[in-house]
Image (cartoon, rainbow, N blue to C red; front, side, top):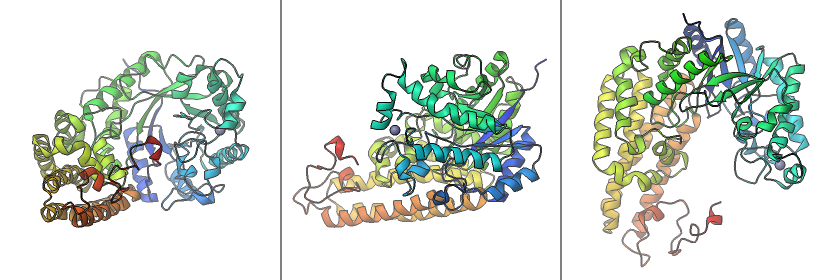
Length: 505
Ligand SMILES: [Zn+2]
């Protein structure tokens, strides 16, 4: 007889522009509690109103009062803060007051561990976190610090330090911060990835540090034994960041494999991570999967599949989570963020989606995708699932519209190209409305609303450029991707803004 998982946490990523109200936080806490999780992790970064960083409080961030309220309403659920104190500090670094803390100019997401003001800030953040959050566990981050040692100051400090200077620098930064958590009478948690890369850094960490080993492909059998002397929490993920909605097959494999390894290796527990609900993700479309994962954590052979767990929405989940993926190409599950959604909305130029996927989605794959998505829309039971499908349909349609416009443009049929593009304005208006609904309903990304507005504005700019230059008025016809680029400059026929890599600022 299998014993249930000793400790289960669900971690919710609030850092990708999520703006939950207290009601939304209640919903999340209800889901976590009903599913049997011991803890709800709130991954915060800059989305918490720290008193010591009054300059970082973006609209809709979580406040200390909300946390106090949540803790008194859900006394049996641990509310665990996930702060980040080196890597993934970007939400602070890209503000005016936060820029002095950066490791490098205008790139990456890491602060400088050799900056004494930054160390002081980390200490203040810990002290404040401990004051607000009652949970025994305080997770202080530590993942993806790929910029270790890039600045001159860090370089010179690292010189001559051990066989692995990066391990030294990392341990030198995190060990005292973890120790500070210990001195507050709490238990520090850290992500495991940098310790896998720089095992030497483990030596300096307090012995009760809990290591969160995140492995989103397969299980943790090969990694979780690489933290000798430390207790380990195994972390799978819902595969949503790399999907138009979710890769249910990859999610199921990952959650089951991690659950199995956690039991077999006798690990401390498991933490389901749900990342990046920006770009039209909506956490309420994931609730059935989150509940299902808790059951699989207790019993890795738990019968119902992830799709079955969607109950009356299971046909919708199958179409969006299995059928779309079968089309391959941009619908395939990889380790990367889904390229269709980022190219459509993240970079402020939706024509990038056409540049990379115009051929693919302009043909049969696009038609097949639309047919699947239409079926999904018909069976979607509520606003959350419908909006996820509407977004997928709009993404494919937008690329197809741009593809048709390009055909006319290539023949110098400027008017026809412009009228092909006209429906895109309505398409982005509609997406903006859906983004607003997602914010209202479940506290999703406010940036998504702005992304849709920016996309529409850019379409209008490109339409104007076609009007001005689309018949060869410059003496040449700029390639469509050039004309559609933000940095397009008439008469700069050789595109000097792109031919050299260093121009890419
Ligand atoms: Zn530095």
